[in-house]
Length: 210
Image (cartoon, rainbow, N blue to C red; front, side, top):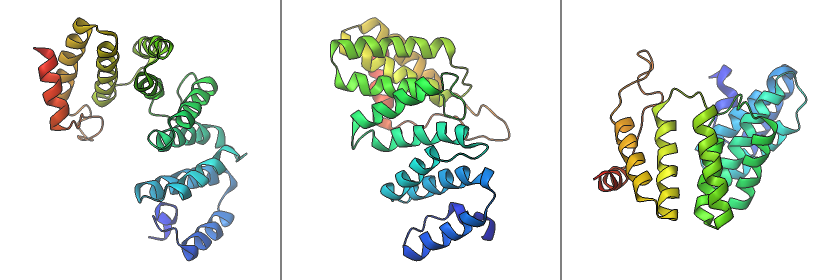
């Protein structure tokens, strides 16, 4: 559709030319948003290099709302590098936490995401920082979505297992299972925020919760 030009997943030469032409004609205050959303469409289509290039352009934009869009773009960039380059992903998450402690215009889960990376690396100092991040998130985050709290509990379990804390892992597993059983948070948006867990994850939680 004409008004959805910035949501198209196409990124061939003609698609790029069309996008740039439309972007140039758009209002300056909206360009950062269009760049970021187009990046999401490309990412969903597997065009990560194109997506990252657009998100980096968001960070360099000076439009009216570019700062808020930049916070979201930093999170997208971090997410996109978690598997390919964890160190780079860590850098984006740290920058986001430093620039945006109120977690505006993000999923508000960047502390969890950074903790996950640190737990995976597993050094003693990393595990200590991961614990601090998870404690901080539980105190400051105001997130109504069960899936965010489910992810937090999974990170707590991973940390507890890395440090040999069986009791904490059991408690977190019970909380996670309860969150997985919760229904819709918003009656008009029944799928928003609900937990979508793989069977393997649920089996693991049940094993730990015994």
